[in-house]
Length: 326
Ligand SMILES: Cc1cc2nc3c(=O)[nH]c(=O)nc-3n(C[C@H](O)[C@H](O)[C@H](O)COP(=O)(O)OP(=O)(O)OC[C@H]3O[C@@H](n4cnc5c(N)ncnc54)[C@H](O)[C@@H]3O)c2cc1C
View: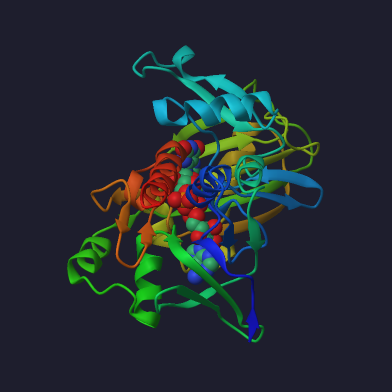
């Protein structure tokens, strides 16, 4: 057993919801630990390296239209963490403010910046949680790190919250479990590709829905996060459902062959990542849930709704519920 310092708050999940929550709490004087199963924070905003290329393989851009994100917007822009990528209004006039923002150097720079005030426990797969006046969080595997805190925040997609519930029965109210059980997500196959030469795309370097199997292709060199020519391909949900368990030789060629033709560049190397929780189709019904008695809060896009901005607002509102309890 490997017991860490007791904290005011432990946040499970280092995606944007967890990191935005941590940012507001640490600025308000709370001591916070984030426990994340990945190698770093980011979650679905991760940026990956592949043979010298840098590729945003999950979320591609964010909007910040909600008044609640105003303070963070100014801070991220001033600190040189985020910049404008392109304006969707030049393509379609149907949305109120079409500017798409990106993390400088990759999307993960945003959650990294927001988590800077907290302690990070990475490669920490949360196996069990227990409430006994304070919260205990136990890691899976040999090392068995144990975190303790007065407040617990969980920001996993609800299907993964329910897996944790099956391992540790920490939610007593059946209505909450039922509400969590109704949340479900789309899937996406992401293909990270290294190219033999730059593509023939113009800025901002994107192609949307070139056919029914592909939702999105983006050139990470034109996006200016990768020195090496590289692209990300996101399949449609239907394609991902159909080929989820297929071998790469079966599921990849029909995505890469059309991409090579469209981009005028050959793919030298690829890697496929399966996003099992891409975007929520049905959400919990409240932007977050917070229990005053056990001091447990649930947040993330399964609560706030599809898109980074909504996950961020869910994390910020979760932090406000904790601060209001003080
Ligand atoms: C392919 C794809 C493209 C997208 N494109 C866009 C886009 O362009 N713009 C946009 O606004 N949104 C986009 N989205 C949606 C957006 O990425 C999400 O809404 C948002 O990032 C969700 O943040 P979150 O913090 O709620 O969840 P997550 O980012 O999923 O964070 C949850 C974290 O919990 C961790 N975790 C789970 N279980 C455990 C465990 N047992 N122990 C420890 N850690 C655990 C995970 O590793 C993860 O880091 C896209 C999503 C995908 C998948």
